[in-house]
Length: 400
Image (cartoon, helix red, strand yellow):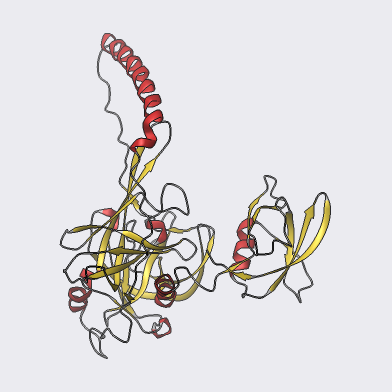
């Protein structure tokens, strides 16, 4: 399954080939001397840049806590076409303004400090009341679209662009790399924006249904529409090391479409585009997070402040260099802290009732935990101070 990758946010940074040098040898020598002098100057400026780099870094966006939130639910938003379907042109005219462009900037500190840019898509899916009495708007997108320079961090700055070109700064309400969902907030003042409507249940989606994908391919073609079919449901896909349950479509998906909407012919949002196939000669294999999964994460962030129902052992771990065991790096207090110790080397696991032990990697252990229910037990075979120990750990609900 290694062919599947996140449909990553499009990076505008590019490298261009140097033009052919047609000068004579004298000119080449002069150029060589000039390049040497330039290299020395660049080295000096780089050192100065490192010393003052931190003072040039923009303040990171912080998570804003909103009160009196009012999510536009299925019960309050009418179906666009009643019980029937509309033409593609009608659907596009009704829902296109709910899909926005998202641009990010990240300050990267290396030998030379520089700023990277990315772009993706998002869908307006709800409202909340601001302190000024106007409506603020929730935007759902992919976590990888707003990812910062390091994983599990958000971008330094995030800008949302509407279909008419109006831009708004966005704040982060929720960020969930595991589900690849992020929730943004914008406040356009008294202006009213188009809000997409989730389908009531993902189970209503069937293989063969017509779908329309709207997004921002290549990070510069916002509002692009493609169409196709639902190719398959409940695909368990390994995307960048994470097992995800996704909907498959043959609608054209390109870099920059991440976070965009997948709509049915009733104008309902049935999925959030997040991945595509990679590989020579592979076409028509796009994937989207089903509406039920995306909506749950959205509502959890709004109502609870975190994603509920997530399983954890309360440890962080990493593969050993030899790949023979998984080493425990941290143990969270109150989460199996009487079971594990920092430095433990996990070699095998099994769930109660199983007779066979299973070898694990950090990735496979994480996927196993994610598929276990809260309250379940897990037997773990590990080495501690050169002694083999078998312990029983409990699956807890992850709470930030």
